[in-house]
Amino acid sequence: MDKAGKGALLRREGSYTSLIAAWWTQRDQGALAALAKPAADPKDRENTRLRMENERLAAELDKARKVIEVQGKLSALLGQLATDSPSCGSEPTP
Image (cartoon, rainbow, N blue to C red; front, side, top):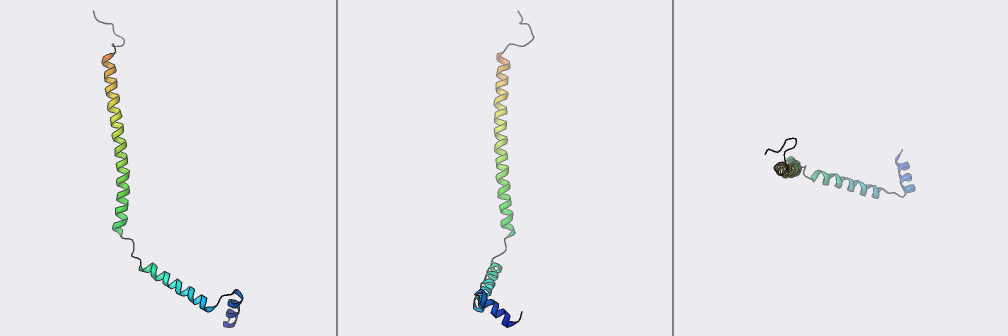
């Protein structure tokens, strides 16, 4: 498409070179702003990963402590039942 054809197309579509130039400027500013952002620090990513792992392990530890507590209570209860009830299958001694 030649220059005149491009101009006709822009006029027909209601776009003008000043608008396109403004778009280019905005595009360039956005690209520069994106480049100006510091890259994600590897230490920050590692800290985030370690925090998440720490939270997961803390939850597992809490669960394990509850299981141990229940097992202890169950063991005590079974021990108490064993001492309170007469022996099964044996005759009482006179």
